[in-house]
Length: 168
Image (cartoon, rainbow, N blue to C red):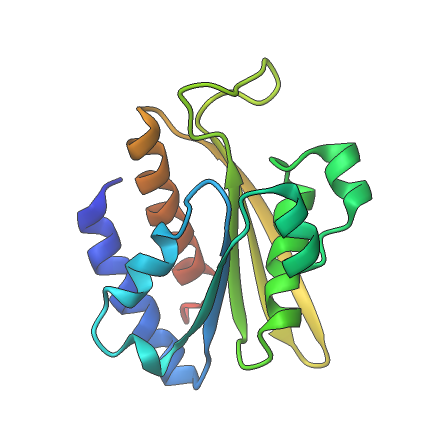
């Protein structure tokens, strides 16, 4: 996936959000603001983009998003458990938003381990539902260099958000 996909997905997601009267927010670790940038590159994004958090350190995840330190200790920053807590934390902090995405991963070129290779990215998706929040997580391993992993992560996050909320 590449930037041309992002140029299609972000406006389409924005239109779905407008149609629902929803706002969007995100928390990024490995993508470092690229998801927010993709959203705000879209004209009219102020109608549906609320805010973005770049929480690269574990401390930022805890302080800004309320990620449980025990979750980070037990599962690590790059885990579906952390990604779900990040996404839920976004909605807790962003009262205007109904949909949130989080990204946390290993973009490389270093940092991979046998269980968590370079290119592994965990995504959290959180959506308000009634009085609560529904969260989901997914993990993907992307090929390529650091820039390619980060770009593919943004495209995947946007495409998956579309699939989750698009009418069928």
